[in-house]
Image (cartoon, rainbow over all chains, first blue to last red; front, side):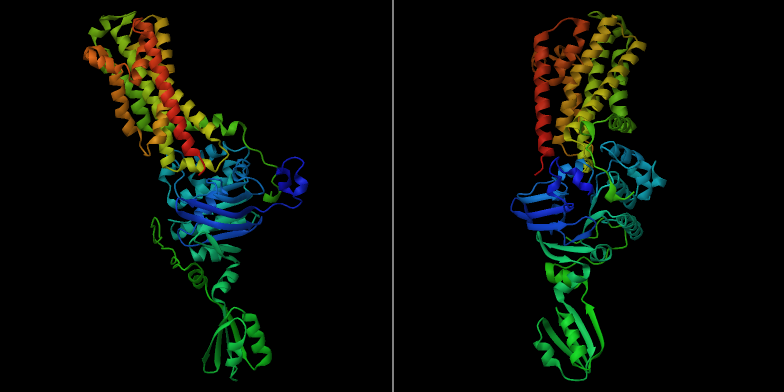
Length: 326
Length: 260
């Protein structure tokens, strides 16, 4: 096991399998009267690509700060690969791409990478990370002269330096234009294919839907839903089973467990509910139903139902610094 | 190579303090035109304007001429400016979010501060050297021993201002902190008798000036030349201000790096 070597001598037998990449146990973080993270428990396994989805102020950045050791929880414990966050960072196991800022404009792109590389025990070669982040062509450009998207790819290059086992991205595409966002995600996706664990915070539904294996929906500092994109969609509003059923079976359907509503449109019946499988099984085996379809409600419905907040619409195509309502 | 086979990782030696980091930081400082002009060139220019008249060259001051006296004052002023701006870089780096970026690297806060201090001192040394070289070509005369002694004292004592720069850098949140500190240093230099000897401005002024931070530094640096003054009080001045600045910088630094 690669991480067994990281355990203290004589302790490696305790953990015959590798520990979770991230383990938050009953973590609470308050800032004065504001509860940013509220008794949150979450485990992320190596190799997962997880989206922390939630409206602004849901506690996503606070949670990430805890995982990175930038802040300490009031209660609960935070472990990264079985160790304290700072130790994981010192060993180059974790790195992060932060939202904005964090770069000095007097350095060139290559110098920024070089200086960051000098702070680690061992790193990938500078030229390699520049290549993988797609910024080899602008290595000699001053950071102050780079576009938002180029700066974000530079942050990504910095994050790749230690070849981290876990990569954390906090709202990585905020303020990027459409092309920049697409290039950025294709770089991340190519990288994740090599087996890196990736956690990204976003309030953009389509990013979570398109790039995550698992969505953790956060609201008011709590996890309100956790699963694959389709599980999360199903959690909020269930699914809709639509079928052509000439026979009048509506009262039977209404009586089934998990069925929320039954709508009749001529020969077609639309059944909304959580247990779409049972409804479909019943319709196909006990009735003469045909043309059966099962559809999920979309993630937006789930987002609204579970967080009680309006989601952010698709990202603006312009170069807005932040397409984010307050 | 896959991520899963990454060998056991190790943290960097010395908490991330390295010559590569130092070299790149110095290069970045010297690339900033404003820093170079205001800290390395201006003191030499002031020396040329205020200290090189025929009258000053001919007039003696202690073991040398008045030009040498002005040279030492400007070397101290340059060193103050350079070390302060080196230390105050933390403010710019905090404002840019670079400090936060560094906190997600293995760099230890102490190694960061040590790097800032070394960069500030190198700049201070450069400022003193430049004024001395210019002075040698433009009529400053003093015995070699005085020359070396004053230059070393100017550099060593003015390095107190690296702590001042750090303190202010942590205290003030600005992306151009030197716009505030430049005038402050000019005032301190004035109070410290670096522009004109304090006793030319009346006895009350001279009395007050003795308690300001640039006074002790200036007086000590000139000591090899003039061999007069109350050495004990001047050393006390430098020691007390050093303690104040270092304590202030340490206090703000702790607060800044505390994980809340």
